Length: 236
Image 1 (spheres, one colour):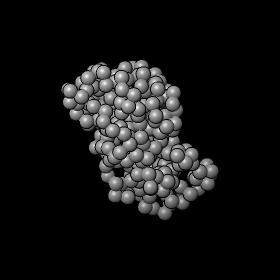
Image 2 (image 1 turned 135 degrees about the vertical axis):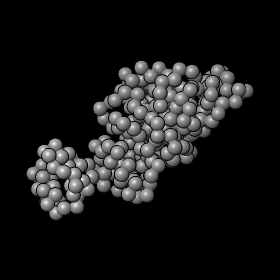
Image 3 (image 1 turned 30 degrees about the horizontal axis):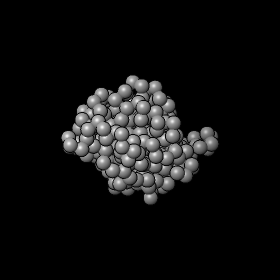
Image 4 (image 1 turned 90 degrees about the horizontal axis):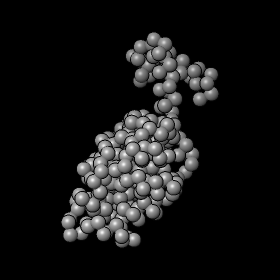
């Protein structure tokens, strides 16, 4: 992943990115229902590696499948590239865990940028203490084998109603997670950075007592001129 793009996306919120994507006609890029296991004080940014779960069938999904070296969940965790985000389609079902602290620790040690599931994590308290951003629906103790079969890797998935293609850029903040199509990520990041600068100006003005009418969005020349002066003064 281009490091300039990564650096830009580390500085902007999912809310701002969602507005930028909405302006491009993309309305369903936020992964619904997921939240950070614990705040990390930084954004999660990286290209998506995808894992798809399907409903478990009892004759295929006994505990012994974890012994297989080609088990998709194990392979996903053990091959996720440095800087990537593992995104799991768990059918929006947190009744069984998508992974636990040992697998998430392995992702951390491989240098993954983060992990996202629209299901749940077991050992959530331990995952909260790891130095890797992790997002899920809620804690869930049962092994994924009870309800879900990890079936295939690196194909388009749906995660929390958002379409995720391998290589799409995933951004998570203290609120939630968004998916940016890979081919427009650079343009989206540049616009989001610019929007964030203006929003910082707006917050200062509102705290000083200004009305939002004509300020947010900017429809008055006086605010545009004040912003230009503010930006020059702050070197932004």
